[in-house]
Length: 413
Ligand SMILES: *Cc1c(COP(=O)(O)O)cnc(C)c1O
Image 1 (tube, helix red, strand yellow):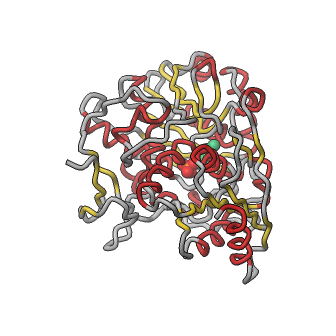
Image 2 (cartoon, rainbow, N blue to C red):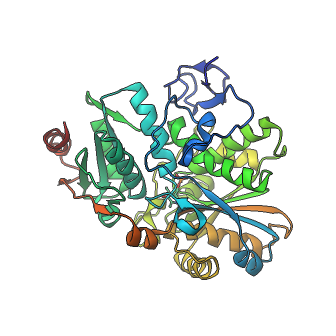
């Protein structure tokens, strides 16, 4: 029996291993594993959850995984009896070794492995505002796989990796925002020899992110009642919803889906705009607390997407201001003793809000996804290499794509 198959959640048809969306209704395909019960393996990093990852092989070097622990200080501050923090980042005392310091490493490892199985010599193209770029660059560096990063200019400072070689990586900066970077990269992936990582449509990304819930559930020995996460595309929310269905199918961890509490940074919150039917502020993403949370075209209405995840879990979306996020960040760092990425503090602020308005009972099981943190420690302790930009292009020039292709073929092909 195959390890897994991909099924359309809307029409129920089963497709080939590498399909992305259902040709009939456009829905995100979902993985069904032949192992209905979660069996963990004694392997490094994310590969502990190998049996529920859509790959047939592993990239062991440099892989980290989520660490979930029971909060004392923040829990006391908020009056919660059972608050669990799922930390994704670098925090050696807690045995947290995600060296790029965000949960994007949970996506990049299985996605790269899957790419190798599918197109062994293609150059992967990744458009990113920073954390995704870092995660893919990290695994590309360790495996010497060709990678083209297309990033908005503003992402420059976030372009470092906890590894030495940058030989297989080409970096193109677009003088625009994340959306401009996505546009350019989608033109590149139409060319021979280049392949898109697929974003939310790629089950390797979603099931990779879903391991956050696997880790938390094994630690808590039960599915949480509430799940808090800061979202840009909302892919993490979809992933956790899907992983929760699998864990219910497992039979050992309860039979209720966790309620998703997904938080965006206002006013640049396209998921909230889609939810409320309001237009996106045209000044976005300027002045954002963390622009990794800005995605102009999140997978909201697509079958099996964010809307379905929220509807099915009775979930909620939060709009968090910069001031609320800043205050939450201070509180978290002071109480829990680790630095967190700005994006993560948007989730902390949503948790604070939910508690204050009485949405959580003190004895409920609450899971807070700290999607990134520990950069300070990583910078001190790990071999850090910055990624240089090989070319900067304008988003609206006809020859931008060709220029990137030229520079890339010279550098890495
Ligand atoms: C990407 C990212 C998010 C948002 O992830 P989604 O894809 O929207 O689930 C949150 N926090 C950090 C640190 C990120 O890098």
